[in-house]
Image (cartoon, rainbow, N blue to C red; front, side, top):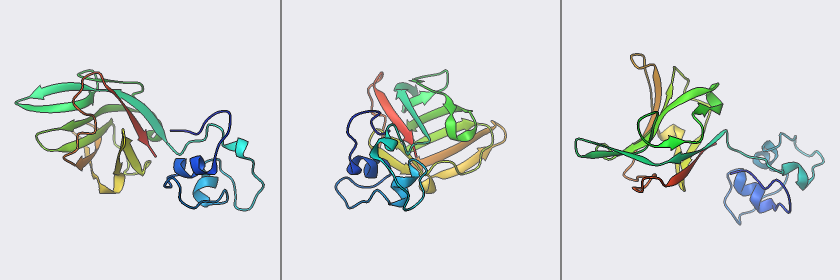
Amino acid sequence: MALPTSGAISLNQMHVEAGGSSGTTASINDADIRALIGKASGVQMSFSEWYGASASVWDIDITVGNYNFKGANFWGYDNGFYGSTSDTTCDFKSGATLEFLHWYSASNTLTFTLAGNHTNAGFTTMTVGSDAYNRSASSYSYSSGNNQTTWAWSTTTNSFGTTVGAVKDVVFT
């Protein structure tokens, strides 16, 4: 989510933003914490330099939509079909268009799809609400017929829930 843009910032907040667990040992000179603001090891730093720093490479809101197909449900977002999003331009893939980001009940699959042909890189984790999905655990594919790149996770968890109109924060780090 990004660190506060003003006021007090704690080392614990920095540690959590960099991917650490709250309440665990950290130092301001840890590589992951320094990476939030691009600082080298051992250089002088001030906590105020971390105002607004974020480990995310793309952060969007999905307003949950639903589509029933032959008795099974899609929950989430499909470009121009159901649901909506705060941003369809993927920051870490040179502005590629988000085609869909949804969970499908028939296959228990969470799918993230972009228009175009893209490498299997650019993000480490996609977090939907409080559920984290590692890119390395996804099934990655490119469909030349649709000109779409897809990352899919097999999961029984519907991270979007079943409330149409609910807003889910989706953060790519």
